Length: 194
Image 1 (cartoon, rainbow, N blue to C red):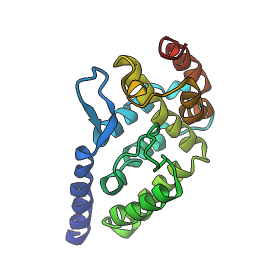
Image 2 (image 1 turned 135 degrees about the vertical axis):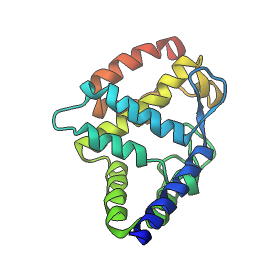
Image 3 (image 1 turned 90 degrees about the vertical axis):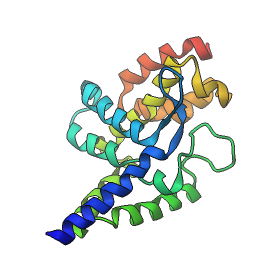
Image 4 (image 1 turned 30 degrees about the vertical axis):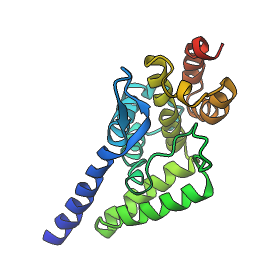
């Protein structure tokens, strides 16, 4: 029992470091950058509140679990903004490899049974093939859009984001998991993209 608790708390203590990872996205009031711990919590709340936007067969409890775990790898890798132009594209092979290595290390802190379960959820989210993961991914894309809307354009202005970039990098993923949600959100972005 003691060894199991030691491992569980080692993981939980490591997970606390996610609060120190700053994201490109600001808080909705624009006062400061959001941290990845705040983002994960907010996404879990998004899943709870927007569950009615999920497709048939989506298990919101599993979606919430995925969203709580999905960015833990940023403890090692940091946030790679989806609209960045620094050459290390969001979702690139090098970023994916670094995140997989981080997942092995971070989830490896847990007891083997829990490690396997939680890392499998993280991998499912990353693959975005199951209904649960597709919906989780759509929420992960919509939350920064809402932050940018509420903060007067936020990082869209900073990164010179175009309508086409918003549609291809973000909209496609949102529409795949929550089409009505994307229609509603996209209409709200017209003030910034025409």
